[in-house]
Image 1 (spheres, chains in turn green, red):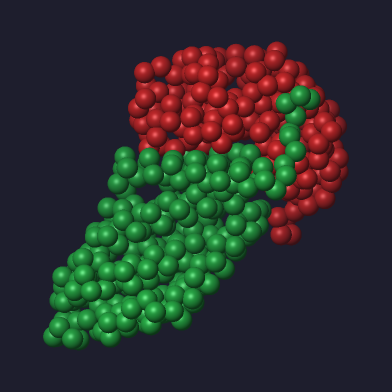
Image 2 (tube, rainbow over the protein chains, first blue to last red; image 1 turned 45 degrees about the horizontal axis):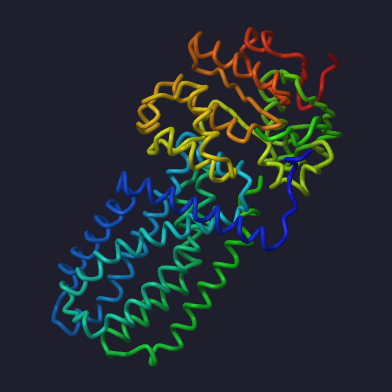
Length: 240
Length: 216
């Protein structure tokens, strides 16, 4: 029994979680760098949303800046859902996800690794979308860059954590992407509303981070709730 | 190569319910080191459910499952390191090469690159091993899947219809690999509809019907 299962203290469990999450993240990144599947599809979709919205709603520079937050977050929300759907679809092919579930790593590591990869892909798409929205909707990015970046990172994090948590269900159900959108959109409403409202304050009123403290706190709380929920519930959600 | 973590797997009164459906209705089973147990039965008899309990993917609704001195529920994460599963699904990432897939799963298991190299050589995962798995033939895919299942030199090897879609040469290779695992002292459980394949390998039989064990 010399190679029998070793004891797992809190410290070892934590290290195993970090190691497992890093391995899953690197694996997803490697696949994405090779296929460009998630980012390309999502970016194309997001660009289409922004262009169509600019043609439909544009009236004058002031109105454009008022509309811009809604357009940006709608593109992020729908595109993000698409990204996570595709990110999980990868796990379905050839039953790869079953291989992950059979591995001796904490299920929370799988959640954290997938969420980190999804977040990176979504932020990469936002790097394309934000300048495009700025161009079409008369936003001077140099004036709003820092608060906008903070809001996008915080809002996207909560969105991705919720989407990754429930996206795992799509690997195991026949409903797939439909199930993801039905479950995730109601859950992410606080993050989306917070993101839109706070972004509007930044773009229209020129609010800085100090002015946004309340919204930032809401978004941070949302992120922490879904981070903890994901780490604790992922195993339960994947149980038979 | 790791020493065996347990010499026996013992399930007592295993019941598995999915909602109101009873997939297993109180099955006792003992699997021993160095033996291949053929799990037989018609469709819906509970073979795959039993395998999912043994692989610790699912938890029995009632009953106890012990792996040597270890409890199948309490020690499940640590026990997973010692269980290998090969099914008709390859459980590989199609956009990664065999080398990348094996390195990834080896990392999750905490297995060295040397072990990956040994298995690549053993299963002749040659130059094609650098191409994306998506491009492989069924036989190539199953060889890589077998290498993945054996990465941790498992004490328990579970085979679920492993010969599906393989040609004669592929089946011969698979038989050879299973015999080698038995010689090594692994516990092997085999579910297959291929009677010739089962007859060639099984030392013991577990026959199931409607979720219950049939008398031998």
